[in-house]
Image 1 (tube, helix red, strand yellow):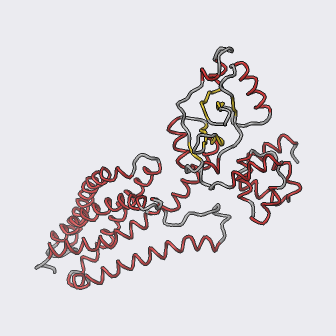
Image 2 (cartoon, helix red, strand yellow; image 1 turned 45 degrees about the vertical axis):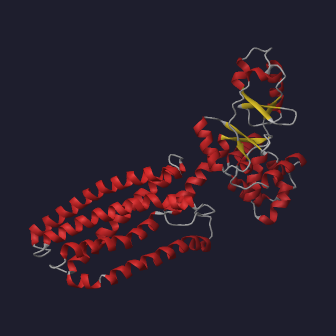
Image 3 (cartoon, helix red, strand yellow; image 1 turned 120 degrees about the horizontal axis):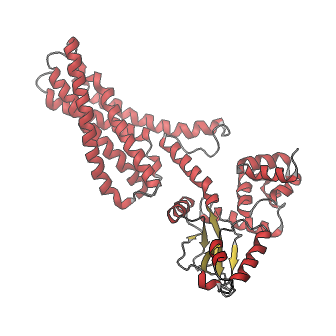
Length: 409
């Protein structure tokens, strides 16, 4: 129903998954002009989003040159720089003048090259020698040589560089595009800021889903199959449930203490939830700081010291609140018996210990996972809470034995 220009704008504005769904419904023959409208890196993403059984037919719709470029891109890992780069970019020779370079770049732009923020200066062997921005070219005297104004202090990535690392580098260096080179310095393509916007969203979504205690979903929430949803959530729930069984085991170990002083059972949810909450806070903050490259593995000791002090202060705060609460309730209705003060000190001391342990455990678990090559986001809030639940009970009843031994126990 749209005219050609509006239809093209509409199609290019769609997400890769929506483009794939649309073309899959149109069929290969009606999809030829739309496939040829895409840049090689976008075409590669679309092909990967198509059902495996029809990918070959859609690849055949591309012109031979683009098909070769897309095939090369598909050979790279999907989450590596080589998999998201655009193999078409503005290129110049170092020995030509600025005036000639501008005319040459204008012809390249007319041919449909999208990445026009920078021009890359290559030698005869396609090795990257330097880079110059369009602004610098237009501001330079026409008779100057390109090699006289190009920058040689290059920021590059390799084809295997993780896409998340590329995104961080673009942000840190304030670049609009970054060149991709192989081991010999030969230029392979460029990754632009537009290319990694989706990468950042994808990585953040994956981390959030893991922090929530689920495997990362491979598809949008309303499109993922019911069985896949159950499987990805059920695995973690089963692991967490098995972990929580240790809480019941710990409660059974202290059964005699609970039988002698039933009042202690009243504060079990309070103690373990406080430890779990503090641990979840610490884990979430550290995971996010790692994702933003604010902290690295070598910073573990600084983080540990900081979290111990933070846990101490937070534990004192919660312990004081718990102490006041027991004293107030006792004054109102004599709820906790003759030894209420010892009970109050037990709860306050336990909160101090549990919160300190929770913050330390929650902050260190992401470091342990990264050290062994796992995703730190797997240190999910429910996982940390489960870990701290068991230790919280041990701390609570150990403090109770020390303070209430000879009285209630």
